[in-house]
Image 1 (cartoon, rainbow, N blue to C red):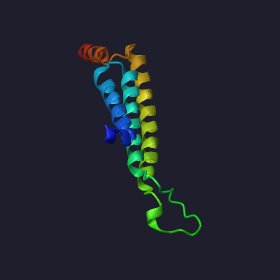
Image 2 (tube, rainbow, N blue to C red):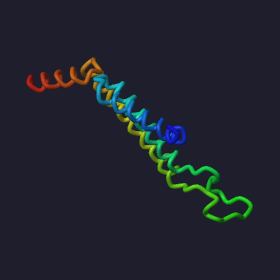
Image 3 (spheres, rainbow, N blue to C red):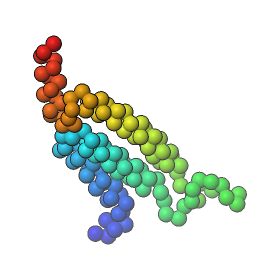
Image 4 (tube, helix red, strand yellow):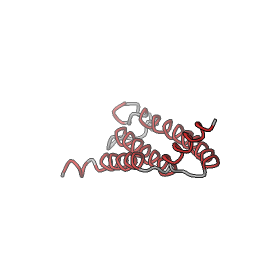
Length: 125
């Protein structure tokens, strides 16, 4: 229990990832799947940010001429998180546009119904 209390941010990240994964896995609605994917992304970003933070250290900006590496955190995880957020927003935008196109064509957001309708349309050709 002590380790959980010390690592509550990591535990929250794992819970977010699990919620997003189960939403992505069990829902048939495309919008709900997209929300699940974004929740998973948030869990991964929180985990990376938590792993990159070290208590007692500061952002890697040189202040007062102090250049010792031990005084600063590693900037790479923060850069990865920022890059991941940009990619996540781009993927979300593309997925939303594809979802709109699917809805205009099949008039449903249910993945199983879209599959069945697409199979029927393929047989009609």
